[in-house]
Length: 577
Image (cartoon, rainbow, N blue to C red):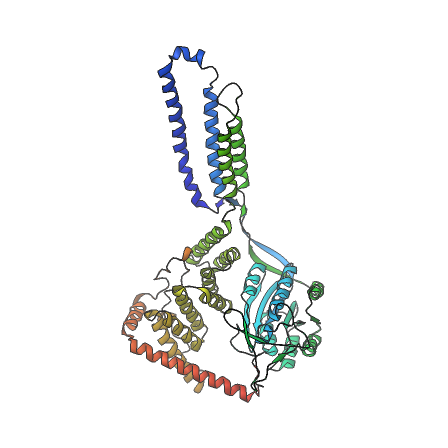
């Protein structure tokens, strides 16, 4: 048995107190009666009073109190981990997040309509795995293939326009990244659904489509928007439209739905093109076609939530309450006093309503604590599930995003983990933002993206300039970046990575529930490695940190210039929407 609100069980200490009170009350009554009449006359004068009924009534009140407290604690059972075999196909949805998706030729906007389409598709799935890829000028895997539709919806909720750093619209990159998200061992059971306005600004779509077809990917395309087009609004922090996006010549951009390109992509692989409609009948048609495809056996561990069973002790409390109200201490029938009735009913209603009051927020806290416990036990997969369930109860808590990001990174699910950490730093307080940027830097460092890792450490230092761990890791990232550049200049040679113990990861711990400070000393290097790291921290002066920041800024500038030159070579039209 499991209790969702175990803190209420402390109220059970009130049982002996109440029992002692009832015993004292009866003793005092007998003593007061003995002062008025003798024991010999008591049997003749006090004929209506029943000591047995008084004791039974007190016991019923104790039963009511006990079962009401148990109901408040919300007993739960019936949860377990089991291996479930399902038959289905793998479906990856590629969702366009470029700036052109902010156009409002469909209500409320193209992007919100696209998210609604994807959400409806997820709601229709029965046993199929779903994955999510977001793209603009480049593409990233937002959610790997999963049977957990609740998790897929959480990742979908986090999608926003401009979340992919590279501006523009690259359908080729979306197709290539989505194809790579499928299993390479199979040549069937693969469905790609592209939801976009179809304005392809760069890349070889035909070549990417041909490779996807060779891998056995069946592509369906859903066009969002209208052929007539609409300007792309630019909004301020309050959400008000301040202007409309313009091209390099200063002309207002008119973004149109390109149905021809989308139809060609679908036709090449044997799929179909649909335009998004208000009724969303196109999703029904897509799923009908997917349902007719040959399916494979999918195996995945699914976590079932504990089921609330507070109804059983609450039913006993109701019966005990009825018994208390109906029973009198007199042998003859007597009327129940209205004030006694109202007090009992008020207590009963309190017991009835409190299990539901605040259950979502406290349930999120309990699941977050459970995730923290699993994280400390290094059971990161189950910790991820606990954090996702907590997020479903309280989706706006940044600490849950932070904890989920750490759990995903620990499982080497870097892209969704980084996205969760970015979502956390966007809404968190100062301390959590610093930790979020720090852990993002650690994840990027492990991925070999030293430039991005250095930039994350810089953000952490901007929030907390005294963070020695961030300074130390920034220096290591800069050093690795220099080594990487030397290797590119020469050849892929020796010494690709330093031992992991050279980095400090002291903040890679789940944030405790209710916003408590993140404890230090989690995964720090041990032995001589820790001493060397400490010495490096102490020797890193403020001047050296500033030099590293300048170096990183210079690297960022050089990288931007490099990208600009590459775009020029590829003859990109200059469109960034």
